[in-house]
Image (cartoon, rainbow, N blue to C red; front, side):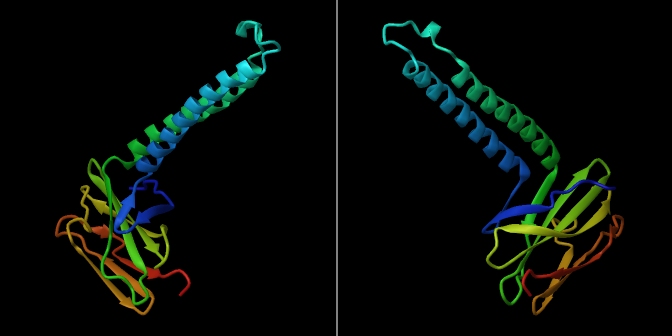
Length: 185
């Protein structure tokens, strides 16, 4: 099954944030900006009034409306990105594997399943990093999630790792072996 995968994931401690989490945060920021543009736009109209006694209806709205339009488009885009990311992340989970390398490099695996197919993406995270980059992928049968099932082996030789992902007797994994080179090693 050829599924799409994010090229990187954000890791905070032992927690892996999903694209859906990031998209929801982006949508929240966009809505905050929209509210801020509305407040600033109202102040701008009052400030640009020629005379204090002139009714606000006569003050040009182009300053405030242009800003609101730009932020509104940002919010609509963020909403679409949120829907896409949440749909993309549905049925997936990620885990930081143990052990880490001698210098603290870690491996992150994100697994997905949909109907009768599954896949996994292998990421490497530098010891002092927050963003893990993709290094390999695998496919499984019947939506099997071997890492979640504990069916893997991770070994390190210095800063070079080898992840072996095993299938069950009925659900094979392709490919099984994944080489990991730590960034900066």
